[in-house]
Amino acid sequence: MLILTGSVAVGGMLVWALPGPLRERLSLASAYVALGLLATTLALGPVNVLLGRPNPVSFDRRRDFGIWSAVLGIGHTAIGLTVHFTGRMQLYFLAPPDGRSLLGLRADPFGAANYAGLVAAMLLLLLATISNDRSLRALGTTRWRSLQRWAYLLLAVTVAHGVIYQLLEKQRLTLVVIFGAVVFTVITIQLAGRRRFLAARRRR
Image (tube, rainbow, N blue to C red):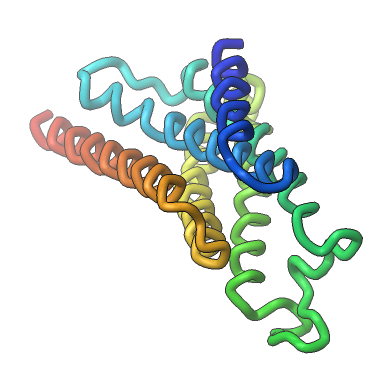
């Protein structure tokens, strides 16, 4: 409930502060809140390592942030698919008659951003679906952990989606800085945690 309340509060402030039509503001707000939740999810494990705390395979706090990230991310996808091409949603992925195509698919930066977003949404759905004790028991620790590592691909395609869209839409500097800071921070924490983990393993 705390995560939900905080997400609604931050998202509401973004919707209020951003200019433009309501649908575009909702799309941007849900995207940035989902990115922040995803970054927190990926940072919690490395932070445990850096602080010398126990770092179990799965723990509720990380699951909670991950699940709400999925909810907001999939919500962003649903809203975002209605911002452009009203009534012609297929143009997000299929080439228009006068556009570049590859086997009928869009072969331009706009299409690439949408394909990356679609992959991100599918990964969010997969990871949220298995973020529970029943899936952990059914899959076993090794297989469950290997599936959860798809979160790194999720971060990569999310960053690609965000970068391309910010370039296409010539996004405001403030939002670009926030986006860059969040991504830089989570990657830095991940790398620092990885180094600490490997150093501890060598000592053992």
